[in-house]
Length: 449
Image 1 (cartoon, rainbow, N blue to C red):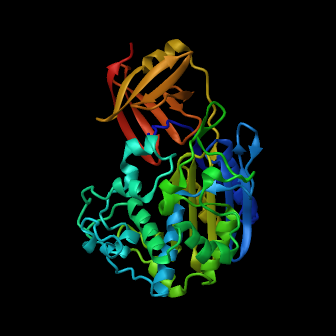
Image 2 (image 1 turned 90 degrees about the vertical axis):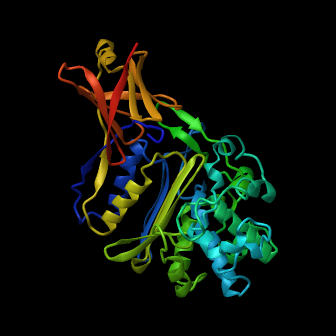
Image 3 (image 1 turned 60 degrees about the vertical axis):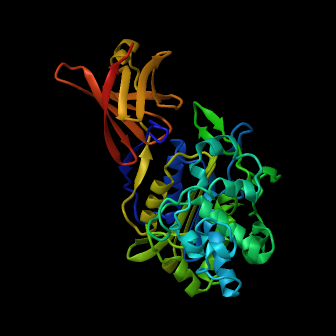
């Protein structure tokens, strides 16, 4: 329960004919996720220069009932990092900097800056504290414009997580510093450098940075939650806060232009890309996560920012590009991506199948009430309100649990199920939490009132 989103969806092996066109399979797959509120956004899938799917699902603006389509503009979050790394590589090519330069070259008074290199910032091995770990700031300050001094004050004087180069820790602060270095070197704002080196040459005309003030009718509204029961709009993170770690907004089509440019070595050479795609620690390169599929290199990156989750995945050798941009999804993007790859490589894959809820008398529901422990710092209160069973994780809003059968419940908005278990006296003494492929036993530590 990340939000112990106790939710719903069963996966069953799809028996779709391999002769069925790939585009139809892809659409059926994403439509199934969308119907279960596990995807709300736009998707592009391309292989060998052919776009197989480019379509919107769900609402761009739920309040106004405006639907997503292939023109919808989304905040990208950390997909931004691959653009930041590309600018660094371009500046190195122009001999305006070196990835071996020390941080102290650009910020002489930065603590231990003489032991931290640009390359370590790119690879998340600098040890610099990530400002996004500051819960107070992330809760109350991210919507407010912030200058360089304010942002650096969040992490500059924090102790390093480890000695530079000895560990790995995802650091948005490190990528913010890369943006400031780009500004120092180019003598231009970071966003202008990205426009000059990438967006303008590739005619990525629907991409930019200041999402707060974007006036386009194609702009998506971000949601923390969007389903048939509940809608919770998200505040917009200011671009001066997410900056070179996560401020870019874009469309599926513009990101496909980026993919094509990488395939054609228009912006970055093969040697530069090979360097960017070389993992050092934790399967991470220069702004890209690196994996393999069918014996071929797979590269990609996810993104998450208030109201938006995103993913781009590519297999350069096969000219495959998958882009998932969401303004209301749960944590299903990786599952969808995995199934899309299975379709593209003619493997078995899974589609979500709707669970059917049954009515359970309130007297029966009372036996499930109580407090359960997932881990010492995370507990769940199971209670009844208005005839419905609720699960309330520590510090989070409740979710409704729907009964599928005796002792087995699910939530309708995420892939989470709860199976209550009984002792030898037939009393409920625990439940099994099924989420994200995990199976966790949660002991009952207190009875309900």
